Length: 242
Image 1 (cartoon, one colour):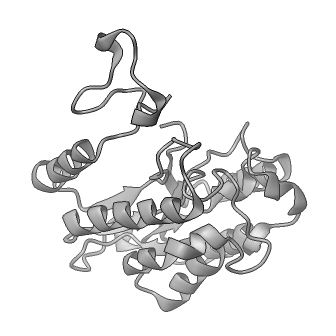
Image 2 (cartoon, helix red, strand yellow):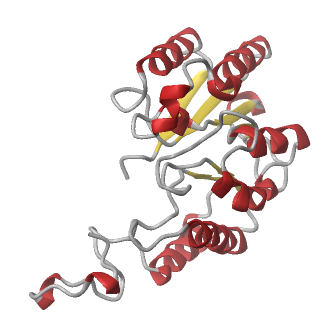
């Protein structure tokens, strides 16, 4: 499934992954580094939105410590190569161990995420938002360039990095969290109200898209919030479908 050496090789050599990888495989490190280099030197964007799922799919060989180390390694590669850009990440359903299981009944209650989450505080300037990320896996950050130049409409655009794994149907923990896990939706609604008052705009950054893969109660409430603030939210990005 993931083009790993411990899975053996295809009997048809033409179907084996080559140097730069294969569409059906996890990305080799050299392909990742080549892509980052291209974005940095050719695309030269104003800011970077990182959509989650940095852990490979070799589920039989991953362990809690190796999963956390991979997140640390990928974060270092990204931050080292994109050090001159503002980076705003969000968490994916593979960025934990076991995959999909994002447990946030209480603050910082996911052991695996706690092992690497402090490596992302470098992307979050505000201390309160750093703690919100460490506590619950979500935060907000202004859309600015690395040098502090304000980007977006009226120079007042906020990116909301949501932990949408809290609604994911394959995350069995959500079936014991019928309320608003981590108070995320209440927080989002209040933040959008304030942004509306200041004539600002919002970008929603998440991993699992709202809809068929989210629990009904979460999905309906988030849909209500996005409908209510459709003049504030100008764009959303969800990367779960690769």
